[in-house]
Image 1 (cartoon, one colour):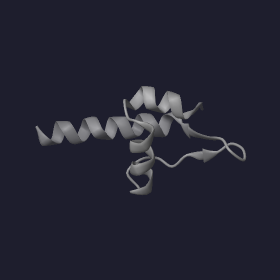
Image 2 (cartoon, one colour):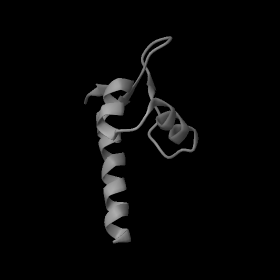
Image 3 (cartoon, one colour):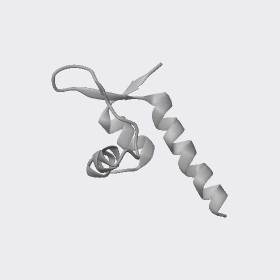
Image 4 (cartoon, one colour):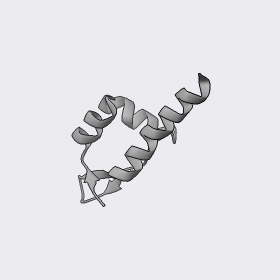
Length: 62
């Protein structure tokens, strides 16, 4: 199990910070895990699942 920091999530998804947090508020993106008082991270597996779900949506639409 690996935890990704925001920069890594941004690199993996090609989304901006503001978009990631917008999607979180809309329950469209995995919620971060608190790591400390001012630090959060995301489970790599949840981010990968989210990406794969976008691919599946694309394939269903085609």
